[in-house]
Length: 267
Image 1 (cartoon, rainbow, N blue to C red):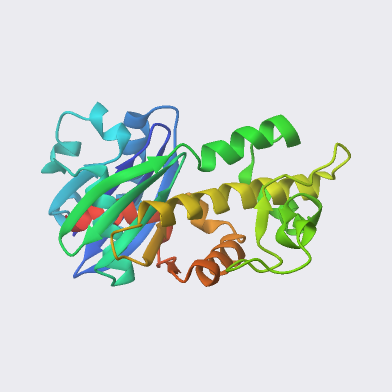
Image 2 (image 1 turned 180 degrees about the vertical axis):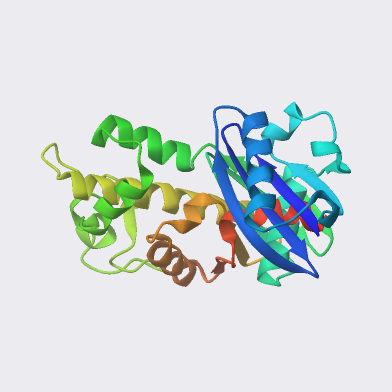
């Protein structure tokens, strides 16, 4: 088995790849990357009744991998560039060879995937960290799952200014329910549910728009979404609407939150 480990600063994701198939992905949180890595690996072996002899190789990726300078538990250990891992994992799980991989973590990065060639083409400082920080300020919580649940009860029409609010007729290429201004209609007495809906929509729409702009001139119209934010239920509404508006395709593959670890394992 090949083991891929995406080492964050406080969260580590680990997967096994056996005969090309993803095997039992898990996530572990700890106070530092070294503790998180060794805790995740030990738990992975224990939970799956594996020994060191069952592991052919360990491949590390992620910002926290810089803290690991020696073999993990004495096993052959290599490292994979995080952007390459993003592309390889997204391709492995989606089956799409030519796409822009949108890695939605604390911030968001864009990787152009053209067959075996993975190129980091930029990113934006908007992601889960943005949603979490603004939620702390406006909703007194940093629990993104709770914010997502609140957002399901909110009404975006009370927060976002839509084309229908400023025009009597649809504009060329823009339906009446298209967003004219994020939070452009918000009032000081907005409910927490409406605020949550606005924050989630703002984060996801901003990422989607930036991804589409990053792809201009590439001839690519497929976007593979990976990272923890893909778990938000609102992704199933926001991105299909954007796909229809711009004539592109957004894909959320299997194991989307583990794609970077998967990419490390198959690298």
